[in-house]
Length: 348
Image: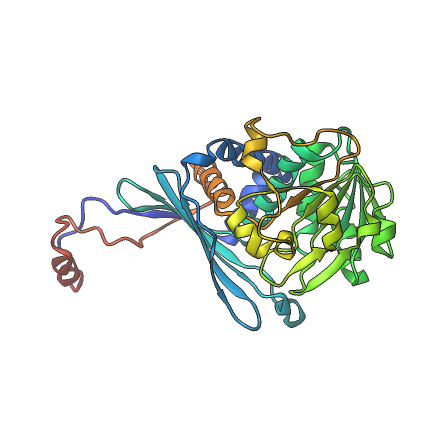
C-alpha cells in the first residue's frame, strides 16, 4: 500500500477546546485581544471583499452565510437565528466558521463559532463604544439578559472600564441568570424591574432581545441627551428594538450600510437616511462623539469582517497549543492528478 508523503490536515477547534482556550487566556484578556484584531481589520476595511450576508429565511428563523476575503485569506461563517429555539431548550444562535488560504484554496482552520461569535460581538461592541460612548462611561443598562448579556458586560468592563451594570429582562429568570453569572466579575450588578429603571444613570444603553419582531424596547422619551446606544438585537428583516424617533435624534453608526439598511434599526427609515460607517471613524476620516449632549447609536448587525478577525485570532492563538485536533478532510494524493488511484490504494 502506497501512503502519501504528507497529509493536508486542518486544525479544528471544538466547543470544548474553545472553552479551554478562553479559560487558558482569560475571558477579559481574550475580549481585549479580539477587539484589537477587529480594530486592525476595520482599519484595512477597503481591502476586503464586502457583501451582505447570504440569508435563507423561513417562518421560524434564518440560516446565513457570511463570507469575506482580504486577498490573502478567505473566511466564512455559517450561522442561524431561531428565536423560537429558546422555548424548546435550544440555542437561538449556533455557528461554525472556516478560514482558508487564498493562494492554495486550502482550509487552514475550522472552528465552532457559537461561543466565538458571542465573544467577537461583545468585543466589537466595546471597541466601538471606545470611540462613541461618553468619556468616563462606567454604567451600562443591559436590556435583554439572554445568551449575549454577560459577554457584552464583560467586554465593556475590560475595554471601557465599566463598573456598574443595570439588568432588565421581561423574563426575571434571565435577569437572575445573568446576575448570578456576573457575581464574581468585580462589577456592581443591579437588577431592575423595568427598562426605565435600568437606564437610570446609565451612559451606555445596550439592547439585546431575541424575539423576531418589530418591538419598541426603548421609546423616544426614554432616551435623554448624551448617551451611547449599543443596539445589537435588531439583526434581521422585521426585527427592531428602538422607536424610530430615537434614530432621528441620534447620530447613527453602522458596519456595512447595504446590510444594515435591510437588517438593522435603520430598516425603519428612508433609504437616504444618513449614517456614518465605523471604519471611517476608526481611521479618523469622520467624527465619532463630538460633544457631551450627542446621542450616538451603534446599529450593530454583525458583519463578516468581524468574523474574519475572530478566525484570524483563533488561527494565531492555537499554534503550539493543545486546543485543537487535526482533521483529515482534504484529499491529498501524491500525484494531484491521480485521485482515483488514491481511492483504489485505500482498499488495501
